[in-house]
Image 1 (cartoon, rainbow, N blue to C red):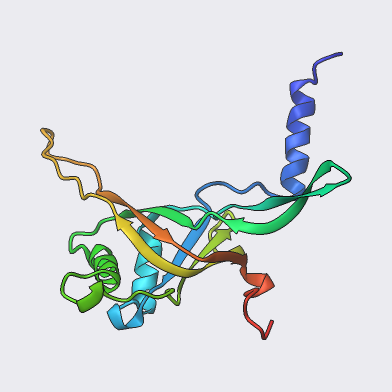
Image 2: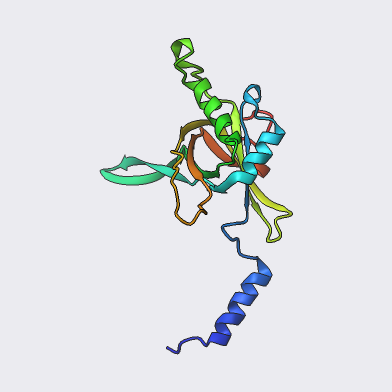
Length: 193
């Protein structure tokens, strides 16, 4: 069997790009709709979008079940299962603006100052993760993470550097969510859809 020529391969990839442009990792936008009473307004959500350096559209899987018929075991598709963990990496600004908002959110859920530790309920907040076209001007698809809450904030690692420069600070932030859906399909648990 002969190996395809480089010209043939380049034509193949050119045709793919013409039909459907490939998505690159940097073509994304994350919007966080957190608690308004803790300062999560449109401006905070926009700032969060600028500071997010990485994220993901969470995966799902179908959990299979089994049934036995005349002694033979069969596997059948079951319910959709969500990962429930969502991680992102956030740039830190000089005033710790986004970090402090995430801290306040975390402390509203579990605080030493509040009797009982804070708010213990399914959070009504969400994140929207969108894929963008190559010029970053148009949203292609968006996915909604419903029932979002902050689970953990990573360390802010500080260090002197001899050359006087330094790296921009980033921290990992981990969230939990209840379920995810494609925005165009509507919320599957909303009775009006």
